[in-house]
Length: 298
Length: 182
Image (cartoon, rainbow over all chains, first blue to last red):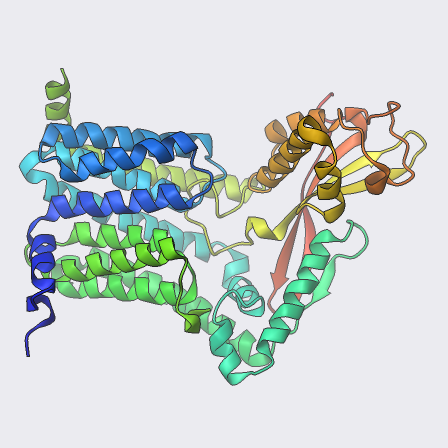
């Protein structure tokens, strides 16, 4: 049987994304910025209009200097968005800006671009994963299981899966949500607590998921730090991590940024993983643009 | 000049990405500090503290208006109520835009409630002629409008308690026009 990457339709793509590291990074970065700019309502109209044209130029130019200048223009747009909405935008607004800056610096390095980008990706993933882990550890709300428990009780995660074992779950979730909405709209001083219906097994599940998420973040951090020894397994771990997060929350743009950093970390020994990163990013961005999500994760 | 600049960046690329990493780490640490010492949401400010603490959706913004004869009205600014949106829709083009601006500001206030954001909002609220549907019998302190000193902004947060299976609402921020010297 022909291996997947050797099949007639896949082979050209597999070869391109495996051999053309920086060009693929520029294409992936452009795709992510395009989706980010077109799906987030707080991006100004002028930026939505101009940036796609800059991205087309960025993807097609072969000159190092032009790439740096175009990346500078895109990063300027991303940076202004961060500056103007510092305490309003989500973390992926920061992350794509960091990735853009790193890519701009890497492109200026010419022949060393791949190595520079790999270093930047390792630093960004390990610092952001490490500090995000610390944020969880210092949050009593998270550590008591309340964050995940609340998400389960409100049907934000695994609503469909729980419904398979507990048929009344959608009604219970609806009641829980209505109670909280009412609490938010009750004048202060006229009530401050509302009970939710949370079956014991859901409470237990909340604790299990809370610590499973912590463990997976520790594991990813370890895989990235030990990547020289673990080789391709580091990349499979990153891909699995993204798949697990995808099963819980609709964070497609943010996850595609994790994958582009994973792609950037690959080298000659681990380039086998590149195709999977590209497929992952394409899938996430297409789903984001279409607003689709597998029903089982609902 | 451009060639020289690109060349300069290229020669120092490894050092520059290391500096970038320090900036990224520094911003996260600064955000953690702000989140722990102020009502800044864990989700905002580039601190990557998402999925640790309640989201902005769990926060509501209220305005407390003290009337001329000791009465008090509480108006929910965010999430916007049906009564408020009906009033806005009937307030004409300019009036509607003004009220929509208040709602937008209240929405943004949830992310990082602080005096530099709430003081101008209180000043804008002090120019509003509130309808009876929202303030009932309360008589505005300055005839048709409320004096800034009689206006307070309050931000509340819903928080789930895992052991008790309850959601409690807590005050996370309060600012009155009087405190701002308005």
